[in-house]
Structure formats: C-alpha cells, structure tokens
Image 1 (cartoon, rainbow, N blue to C red):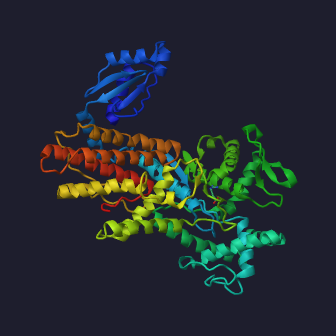
Image 2 (image 1 turned 45 degrees about the vertical axis):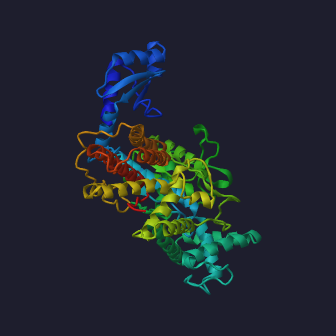
Image 3 (image 1 turned 135 degrees about the vertical axis):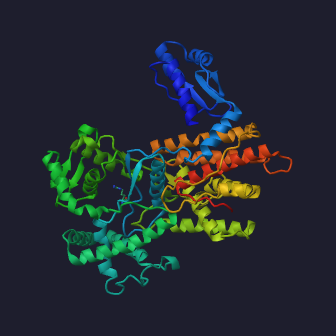
Length: 598
Ligand code: ARG
C-alpha cells in the first residue's frame, strides 16, 4: 500500500504544484483505499472543493485503480484484485508489515516506575503496559528506544517505613518472615516480606492520624537516611531488594523489561550539581518559608516549582530535574516520554518549564503521556489506606475464568495452563489498552476480565482459528503460520516466509474479503497514530476491526470445502495467513501473546 500511496501522492503533487498533499483513509472500502481531502488546495486555488475533486478525477490516472470524486474528497479505489495483491504482498513479504527502517531517532520511554515497598496494584498496569506498547511500537517504527524505569526508591515514605519497621517489626519479626499478630490474616500467596512491609506502612499511616508526633519520627528517619546513616541505609537497601524481587516476578509474567532501572535514589549524588546549575542560571529564588523555588508565571504556570525545601532537603521534582539532565547527557534523545498518571500533570508542566528555561535544548523533546487513573467504585485507590486492588489478583482471576471455560469446552487442549495464562493476561491488558488513555477507568471485575465482546481473547481467538484452518490445509500452510514465536520483550522480526503470493488471486472479490483487506490496510496508520498519540488504543481498535471482518470473511467465503477450486482456496488461504500474521504482530506489540490453538 505504501507504493500506491506514494504513486497517488506523486501524481497529486504534479497536478497541484506547491500544495501540501496529505492523504486520509476513507471510512469504508466501498469509498476506496485512500482519500485526498480537497479543502485546503481548493481554497488556495479559489475553487469549491467538490469542483476540484471532479477536475482531478477527470485529469489523473492511477494504475490498477480508479479515481472517484465524492463530494470534497478525491478517492482512490483499487480494483479488488489489485487491492488483494498489494496487501498480500506487503503482509506476506519479508519486511514486517507497517514497520519502518531503523533510523537515527532516539526515544526514551519511561514507564511503570512503581514506588518501592508498595505493591503492584491494578493502577500500575496502565503505566506498565501503555509504556511497554509505546516502547515496542516506536522500535517497530525504526526508532532507537531506551526503556526506563524511574523507580520510586527515595523520599519521605522511606522515613515512614523505617519508623514503622523499628516500632513493630525489628524486635519480634526482623526478617519479616512471620505474619504480624496484630494484622488481618493474609492469604497464602501474600505471605511474603513485601506484603508485610505494606502492612507496616498502612498501620503507620492509620496510627499517625491519632498521633501526629509519629510524623516527626518518620521525618527523623528520612533525615538519617539522607545523611547516610548506616543502619538506615542498610534497611533501605534491604526494603528495595525485597520489592525489586517482587516487581521482577510481575514484569516477567507480563513480558515487560527495561534497559535501565535507575530509581530516584540513583540521582541523589547528582542533585547538588543540578541545583547549582539552576543557581548559576539565576533561576532559583527564595520562596515561602525559605524554600528555594523557580517561578514559572512567565510560562503560564502560577505555582512555582519547589526545588529545595526550607530545610535544604530535596523533593520529587529535584530528582526529576537531575534525572532529565542525566538523560540529556547519557542518551542525547529526541523525545522522552513519561508515561505517568494524569494526577501528575502539573508536576510535569513545572518540570518541563524549568528545563526549558535552563536549556532550550529541552524544548519540544519532553512529553508527558498522562493516563486516566483507575478508580474503585468507592473512590480513589490509596495504598496509605490499604484499599487497593492488587494486579496479581486481577490476573489470577482472569486466568481462573479462562481455565474454567477451557475445561468445559476444550478439555483436551494441549498446554492448557499456558493458553489460559495467555488469554487471561490478554483480556486484562487489552481491556486496559482499549480504554482511551486519558479517561479515568472505574474498576469493575466483570469488565476488566471479560472474555466476550470487544476483548483481547476475541482477537486471540481469530488468530487461533486461522492457525487451525492453515493446519488443516496442510503442512506447507501450517509452516507458514508457525511464526517464530517472539520470545521475551524484544521486537523480534517475525520470520514468516510464505514463499510467494499466488499468481492468480481469484476468490477475493467478495465484499467480505475486500473489507478484511481494507481493515488490514489500516494497520500502518494505526501504528503511526499509536506513536503520535502516545497510546495503544488505535492499535487495539484496529486489531478488533481486523478480527471482526475476518469473522465475516470466514463465514462468507468457504476455504476448505471440497467444491472450492484450488486457486480460490489458495488465495483465501493466503489472506488467512496474512491476517494471522497481522494479528499476531499487533498483539505482540501490545504485549499480548497469541496462542495457535485455544
Ligand atoms: N513513582 C512515581 C509514582 O508511583 C511515578 C514516577 C513517575 N516518573 C517520574 N519521572 N516522575 O507516583
């Protein structure tokens, strides 16, 4: 399709010299494959857009297609056979469909970034999986990607943890390997030190409400930590270790990985230099109560950015400033995406404004991709209060439901456990991606782990069904779909060599086949949109559209029936293989596995 696009653009460019040529995708294949909206060019030429569309339709020609004026649009409509050939060749060729060649554009994607000593909640899924998809998509589109995790391993909450540990654990439960007699009983799989740290944290916050003096205790511990007190450091690094072990287990389950896990603590010894830089640039001022601040009114932000508190200690923003300067030096990036919840919009506005003042180099390079928070029906989740939904519970529940369905419908399925895991995770991850990135989500079990309707398993099912058709079609076809399963988090070039697209492509003229081809053709745009809008939603939607039109094709166009002639069968099988490949690749970019049988 890229070639057709280029050809169409080139002939438009010569018909309309000096005009900006931007193409769109019509809403349905009946309108055509590509549309040129005539509004702007018509305005420049002083003619009504429909008139320009008609003139162009009469004047231009494109091989294999016709040009049709539809109101203010000039549509290019390929002939059914040409459409099939163009797409099958692109989809079954050696280059992954819709990918772009490697080029020199460095993109940093910072995502997940959980706080140490807290547990992974359903809220963390958004940053983790949106970020993962953005890293994958940008890499697929040829960018050099670095996946960063800005672990929350520093800050006053460590004072809280240290104080709580000292009060209620050190004497009786120093290794955190026993359940606390004062805490509610915990289920088997939570009997781990990290969960007990979480219980300490919650208890401290509860009691501190009655006894505000405890706050000073926590502050004092954080000060000791900042000053390098050896006991505080030892406990801190142990808390960090316990947490990381848990996080890595969850990342492995989700198939997510990072190139750098430099947490907030990593920037501790870079803070002074960052502050000095602000100082020499004359940006630091004295704020309320003696804090050091940067005023941002001239950038349209009324709240100044606090860089140092009155007592001279650093805060979250200080560490983010140091991190940005470090990344500038280390990665010389073109874009740095922060996939962080929308409750931090102001923080990033301030951060970026300060950086722009400090060095215009940052201008336009820093992007906050905020996402709507996951809320519980009863309100915001809060680790402090202990009312959270743990991600693992959600994943496990989804897998359990899938397992029950498999037991009922397909008890002889090989590798049942693996398939249940892939589908359960597929449901949760796809649900999250399908939700618009920006809107808040109200968590409801039945929606998050739904298996019917517009879900991950629906797309996975379309893929598995195709694999089954191809297996029945014979060994050569089965080989074609046995893609090198992408292992691990890397965007593997899928080695999928369907030798050649058949010379003749009868059997694909039916509307059902044509509309499937049209949706497949939408994949490259969906990838570009995901990249531009910093969210996986366009990709998820396109995969659903492909899976749905495949289902229409499969019902309308018989493939393996005995009365179907060989050339028709082969053309349809080729379309099946192309669809399987597109679905598999697309799901993979989103971090979802596609089983071949289910
Ligand atoms: N750890 C923070 C949190 O859980 C998110 C960090 C976001 N990244 C950043 N560079 N500030 O809220």
